[in-house]
Length: 280
Image (cartoon, rainbow, N blue to C red; front, top):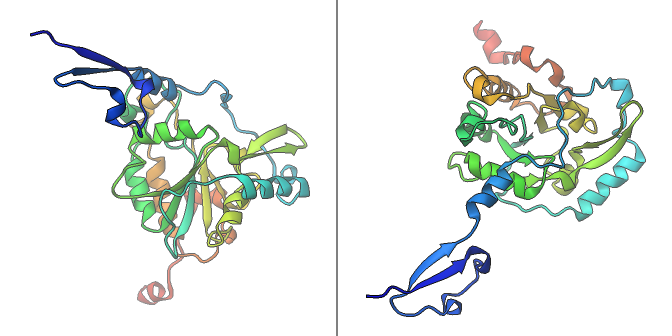
């Protein structure tokens, strides 16, 4: 018996391609050939257009009081009007908002490790599961949307059953601002989110990022965390997400986050309630 093979390139197929268009005959064997694995590897590599940042800027408060500059607010307004957001999961009434960076926050994107489990920051899923109880979660990366989707798929974040991500923001949602000392830098203005969704504001939003400059347009809402690097070694000792989870739980019931100083988050202790004071 002679076997007849039909070779089909993966690039010739889409999700909408009907089987009738493939001109298949009875008893024909199909071999699907393509470069899917290579494309995944390509996307898994660090983007070449993103500069490596080892040390964050030593930005003083008096140097970055730029959050109300008209020209920068105008840029934010343009992002609010033109930047498209793909809602993955609807917000939940009464929940605070947690905005998370990816690179060096959730995983080590320059590690030589080969497995996603080795790149992932320890306790990532436990952290997101716990945070999701009281916070809606948004991911904001200074890279492209395809990079974000690929990495979060590899890490299992996008499909986890115990928590949901509201949406992703990429580099196109950022704006460029001019600082007196460091020149033009790209930042993540939370007002882009607040301008699109009225139920979130500076009073109920907190952003985690390993780079302080990313939240200089909303310094009161940003919390700079320790960068997760050299994952092949540090994944055995890093406990940053456990500590951050404790902090999120401690402040979750507060009505106004603007009274907090996130620079001292490690020393923060939740004030006892009146009932707890009476018991003591």
